Length: 161
Image (cartoon, rainbow, N blue to C red; front, side, top):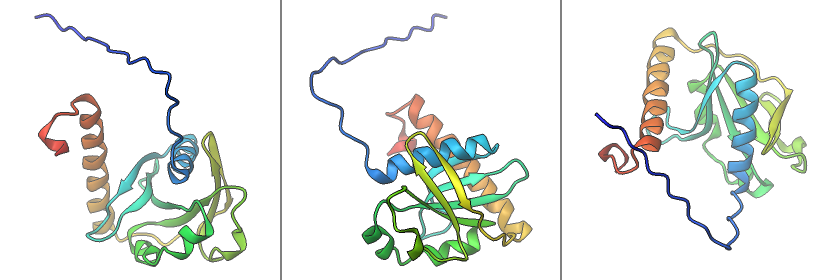
């Protein structure tokens, strides 16, 4: 059986659009989490009605939520963040270096990020998940990651639509 791949490259003089600021922050956060031994997924839904920007699964099974805020207006418009706390062991904000950090709640973690990486400036307090919830979230994380990978390999799959 022959397995043939055809690569098509589209040439254009049009500039590539710049990624949205939140996407840039999420990319830097994902790179930093990888450096700590975490796997991460973006736009993860831990429960109905909640969608976190980045969920990290650590080497010991710990689950971190990172909300990426590209502006003060973006932060002020976020009325759901406290609903994420029961769904993670640690909760962080990720912002760029121009963000006014003093407005972020002191009892949450703080990450400063750009498109190349990120640094934890304030470790989030730990609030361990119950074992049953951790098991459910870890399974959902695995399914989410597998579906994302499948979507990259087969964009026309019914999984994606």
